[in-house]
Amino acid sequence: MSDKIMTLHPDPAKQGVNIDRAKYDVVKAAILELLAEHGELTFSALTTAVNDRLQGTFDGSVSWYVVTVKLDLEARGVVERAKQSGQQIVRLPKTAE
Image 1: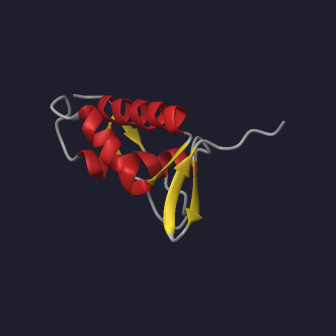
Image 2: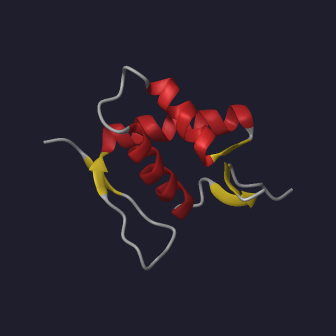
């Protein structure tokens, strides 16, 4: 039996999902590495970049996992979502200085 994680959702009215911990960790690492490299990305660009990074090494729908893990990271305050020119931007939170 594989280890699972119950994800969170930033909207308290919605429930997260129970997913495989190893897949969660791989997608989370890819998201955080890409945001550290680029500062911020549109959600579409982030999904494409994670897909490119994991291509051939990931079993499952990368796009679905990116959505699920990104929502969990938002709910935990690890990443934030913003709107820019009508597009969803994903970035690491700005730190107070």
